[in-house]
Every structure is written in C-alpha cells, then in structure tokens.
Image 1 (tube, helix red, strand yellow):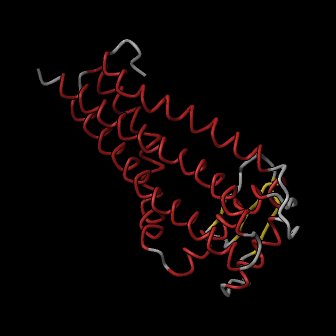
Image 2 (cartoon, helix red, strand yellow; image 1 turned 135 degrees about the vertical axis):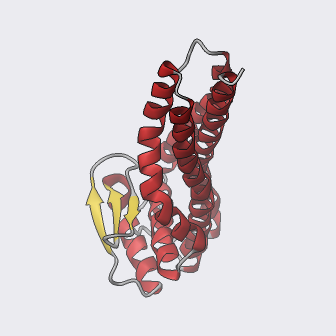
Length: 227
C-alpha cells in the first residue's frame, strides 16, 4: 500500500529478504527431497517415534494436501503433514516432520514463547485484518484516532511475529537433536537436514522484518499528519 509514498522504500529490504528466503526454502526442500535417509523411515514414522518417545501417544498424525502445508494444531492435538513429508523418507521430509513434532513437545512442556504466542493469536489475527482498514479510513477522512487504533492493532500482529521467531527456531533445534537421538539420521545427514530447517527459519525472519518495517512506516505516516 501507499506505493506513491516515499516511506514505501522502508520495506524494500524486507521484500528482498522475503523473495530470497522463499527461493532458499524451495531450493533446499527440492534438493533434499530427492536425498533419501539411510534408515528409510518416512516422515510420519519419524514423527510418530518422536512423539511416542516424548510420551505424546495421544497426539495424532494426519496426511493433508498442499506443499509445505505441514503444521501442528495445539487445539486438536493433531500433527498434520503434507504428502511429500508424510510418505517420504527424504532428509527434507524428516526435518519438517521432526520440526512439527517439536512444536507438539513445546506445547506439552509449556514452552513459554509458545504459550505467549497462542495467547495473543486471536488479537493478532484480528489486528492483522482490521489494522489496515482502520488506518486507511483514518488517513482518508483525517481521523487520527482511527489511525492510532489501526497502529495499535497492527502492533499486536508485530508482537506475534516477533514471538514466533523463538518458537520456530527452538522447534528446529529440537528437531535436529531428536532426529539424531532417535537414530533417524546419521552424523553425515545432519548437515543437509539443518539446511532445510535453516532455510525455513529464514522465511519467519523475513516475515518479522516486514511486519516491523511496516509498523515503522505506519508510524511515520501518522507522524506526518501532526505537521
């Protein structure tokens, strides 16, 4: 939005990083989707073993459609894996499956950043949807109070993005440890698996940077209305 506004240049670095991160994660996933693990265990089997080892037999695993649509649902206690991850024994599949299992373990042990993220999720979802509407409305009718409200709501979404970073990076670190401890990957397979998880983490970093810079942009536009 506001492509004619000079503040748009603020988000250019985040846009570049986002494009780079998406290319990086696609490249890493595509590359290591063709490299099969020596043990030959599928993503679903590795996730099941990791969950059972953590005493999480009640967490179910489902196959879902889509590419890189994998996620853990804390409300239903379900780990959902895409077909490329659920069925395959590639290093990419094992990394993604273990990462999502890491989220289930975070939920089970009460990992503080995850608790915080889940608690602010409803506000963040509403804020990300309503913030721009309120801000633009306030901008066009010169209602500073509406602009301020939009900024506050958008700030909640920014906080959510910031809190997401430690949650995701911790899940990736757990994944590597769990894969090694369970014997799902060998020492030589850890490096490639780490590359997949690191590339995925870069996308969260790009999203956070974009959110922060957008907030700064809104604040600058709001400040200009005081002049």
